[in-house]
Length: 248
Image 1 (cartoon, one colour):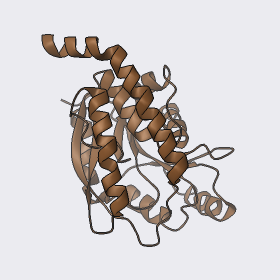
Image 2 (spheres, helix red, strand yellow):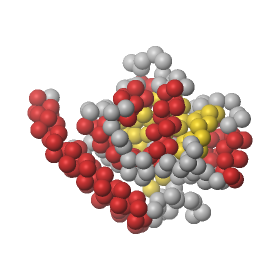
Image 3 (cartoon, one colour):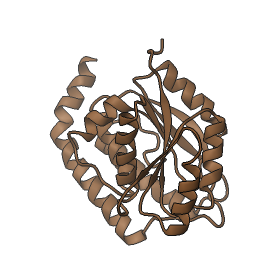
């Protein structure tokens, strides 16, 4: 049975996504979700679009003084969502990659199980770059090793509903990656805390004119460093993780 006080919103990190952003916001508002736009140091053109959207009812704006990276923007947004009184936050990208037609299923799952982190695992169409698709499998393997489990189906899909109390409890005690390493690291560290997770498929499309902020060398170095840190963290935690599973 769902707890009372279920109050979700959408947290959208925005960095120069002025073209797809209005459509993403419209779909979320049609689904009845208030939106928190996190302007992560966007240029003047995008900032003007964000300002216009923020004039609508139930559209909140958090403007960061400089670009923090996707993870930094999401972290700031989650904290602001909690400050505004929301219980759950849907993380969704501003670039329109995520198909929001199944959003009701995600909201229903979070409402029914409010302590659970509801995560999307991607169903790609032909638009996905093959290099991105195959590279994900390396991260999948490292995540399974670092969790000593196959429970995380996809750690890189940034379409998920966080229960804010449990998520902020982690953010208050651990410094997480602030860029493209964030999505994976937070799931692994929540898994170490035995955070319940529920997985739902979500279709993902890469628009031909889409704007990607993934920087090949910088972000791959960050992700590699993250996997190394998590591996040594797993080694320290392995006896406790394995013992919990043995007695469960």
